[in-house]
Structures are given as structure tokens and as C-alpha cells.
Image: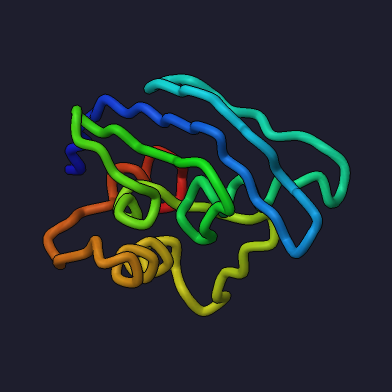
Length: 130
């Protein structure tokens, strides 16, 4: 059985900007999201969608501004939030020789989240992947 704790999560984005050379991709983005909110990012190719998601997930550093995650009243920068923040692109590669369980275990191990005592069978069963 898998027990999932629900956390209170807030995302604060203030003055977020990214520049490559002389080209500004994002300028002065500000937003506040709370548990249950949904963020939809749209735009044409080159508009900065992937850059924004990389900044929010801590995979890239901003030129200016801040991204802060507040989880159960504790504040984290994206680089410190990797245990609960991630990004999955549209062209994720799965290893054909691994089962769904093995993929979940692999990702948990890579992210430093697996200590061998976590049972993911409940969520996998609910998605028909057990």
C-alpha cells in the first residue's frame, strides 16, 4: 500500500528574466501559484516556453528575478527543490527492456528519493501499469 502525504505548495515567481547574449527570451515574469492551481504555457517556437520551465525546475539559472517554492511553510530555491520538482519533456525516452515499476525505481534512484522501502505499486495499479 502506498501512502501519499498532501503538502501545501506555493510557487512565487518575481521579476523572472532570461537573456541569451543580447536577446531577451523572458522579461520580468511574475506569478503566484498555490496547491491545486494549473499553469498553462503556450506560444510559438522560440517564445521561451521551455526556457521558463527549465528556470522553474532549477535546470537553468535566470538572468534576473527569483523562483521560490514554499512547501509546508519552508522556502526553497528550485535547485534545492529537486526532490519534489521535475520536468518531463514531450520526447521522453523509455527503455523498452524495463517495466513500469523499473522505470519508476530508476527515476527515484537518480533523484535520490529511493531508500528501498518505498512501495509504488498503489499508484502504478491506479494507472493500470502494475
